[in-house]
Image (tube, rainbow, N blue to C red):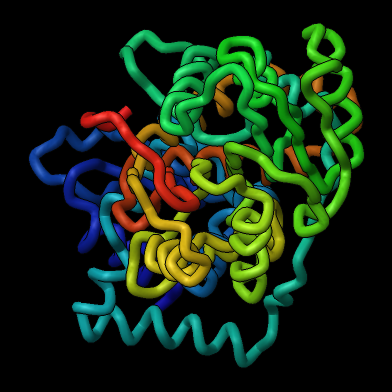
Length: 396
């Protein structure tokens, strides 16, 4: 049986709540939900190259992503994120494993591809400039999950809501010394200093981010209270009443989790509060997305809540609250995707090639689909203390 037929059989047997049409070599075939008029589709995929079927069956999300980068298919109706949402909702891998005959066909294609060694798992990393972040992010330049309080919240609202929740969980007040590990462009520190009166230090491993963050601190008139430093987090000295780390732990190797939490413990004032915000794994096994690993964040990972808890326990930092706000990633990434698409022509003129732009678009669309339809993805807020710290009766 051809790889095209195996892929079509997967769609027919696994997709139940939507209708997908494939336009290949001038013929349109539809799959999925029954009882829908034959010409009504949620998504129409125009397959331009037959290798599309082999790549997707053999390499799953990596294969689909690389097929999109190379132009093996285009979306004629609906959107790329619509297609990815349908595929994730359909749980095709799980259903294929339960269908012995179909599962064996897919497994054979995967194994044959490995034997032929057509796929070289070479990590790629694209250096991106401030222009990409400025086009995609809100004015705070926050590159992490926001928090939705209202259906009408804009991207700036989502990020301000997130900043406020973190500041309130940490009980920030005038006189606090706040350390932000992995501070990015300094948005959280600037918000905390402006609204809650704190002073603080931000640490980033990007020279470009540090330079821009310090310019933003100067522009906000906060250079006397905030400073951003380029360097390794584990070299931080001093003592801080509050410590926060947003979007950092997922880039720390597992072998360094102890060092990461140990650093927080070493610099935190007795009775102080800390909060880690990170993309996490909500599953028995952590299946790292090979597309993200290869094209976007090589070497990244998603800690399990149990791994975070174990490290905090070992360093005698009692957990006060743990929250999964993963559902709020979907509106955040949708807003980034909207801004990215609106700026695509400008970014192309700034020197980003078509392959990079398609790779980054696929990454954002995958984020929308995963956040909205996968229960194994998570975004953890873990609040902890060093010693004793009182909390309000209600969760922030």
